[in-house]
Length: 314
Image (cartoon, rainbow, N blue to C red):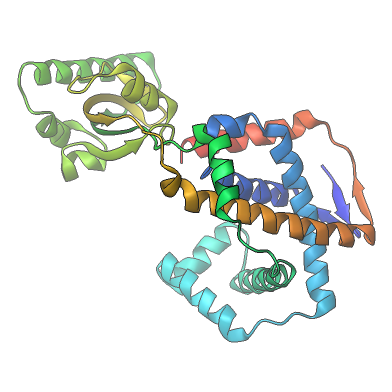
């Protein structure tokens, strides 16, 4: 893949970073399944955004937008605190092939871009309530509280990928299930046998789980297969083998307009600002030299699928 903006190559990494930003935002406003139906549109927008970001970086330089060193230092200090220390931040950056100086420069560029975007979108006003209500009524299926469940589990990982070790693990878990059915406490067995920290910490409790936000195998078992109080058969995931106890399950109810209003305001205001910024970037495009080698869509769909797979386990 090669996209060039005034001779500057736009990397696949830059496109995927834009895709992640789009996915992170829109996943707050629509189900993941619906996002998956917009593959082509999201990929197109991610590529356009990557080009637009490069044009905005060049415009920042042209306008000579400056950011106080103090603002950059505060942001750097915050990142170091989050990492644990400056040395730990350096270690994290080193694994990504970055120096502290390069990271500091990227923070400065990010703040310069924020300043430019704020200027470009300063005239955008928030939506009035009738528009919000109209959007709510047209997209009511999006505004439903997610299904939730309280679950305990016991996790055991096979000693190896050999079928004999896998069979032993399944047998061990089925034996533990039988003990639970005969009256032993799930929490006690989780504390004794589970290889998940939750076993000893909280009797195997995974806390409140949301439909669609966990690995598919657990999602299926918890929200489709089990009734409250039931113990599952062995469930295999990328983490290992589990048995589950469904303690509580609550099906999502439609959100009222008042409950959904702020989310809709955020979405529509974001889209208004995006439109204003797009118009500004279109003006920059008219003066730029943009080259695209026209890589087949299948290449980008493969990258998109890889991205979605990575998100499922997060």
